[in-house]
Length: 306
Image (cartoon, rainbow, N blue to C red; front, side, top):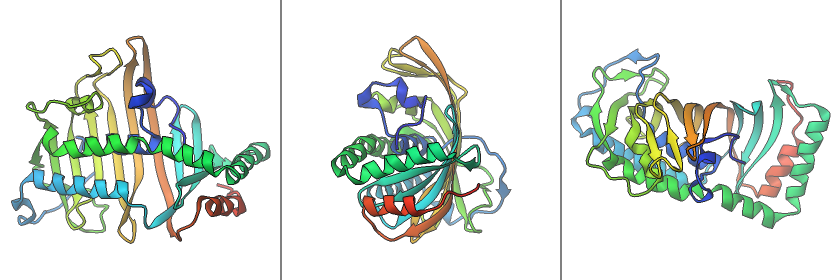
């Protein structure tokens, strides 16, 4: 999938850009952010809180690194995106070779015939160009290395504390969650330009106590962040992000919601507002298949009415 239009990735040189999935994954995993939102008060076992808060972060980071490397089980789902390009829904299938997607809805309605034909022609062209598909996947997955670097930095980049009262989200099938707040560690020195993002964030994470997976993150950019001393980009304070994920089955977790509100300046000149709302639904486990098989499944699926 191509990076979303006006994504923060446009602010950085190509070498710093992440693919849509990898960028949002890395940034979201970093932003275990702050606002409480609608939560349910519940008691978290004192035994769970006997560990160091940092230990939970170490475990969660390890789980996310595993998720980056693991491909199975494969999933099919709908991704609904509202951003500067409009309101779109895609049917997405993960294959052994990479992810394929078909645009199916615009503004909640089936795309018109001409647009659907263009989409079908695009998918058919992929069937005869395995080298082109492999190149596309390689380019779109290059951000995974940056994501891995950032995730590995998390245990030491922040100072972690247990959230008073341990407010539960109430969406975790009744399983207990460990709730942790964090703020930048003043002793942390970012080893890369991308890692500068860690210095302007503080927040909160909800961690499933059994799986050690993040179930929800909310947060803000509480102070401005410079990339390349502000020459490459500057993120203004006040940005807000929300991330949720759940177990899709067989131990595979998937993002179900992502909200992004960021104001930034690119190359000391252009200020843009990044506003994205992303939801996934209709998640199901599918058999392992080649990308050509996945494309054919998409082509054989009738357009939904909504």
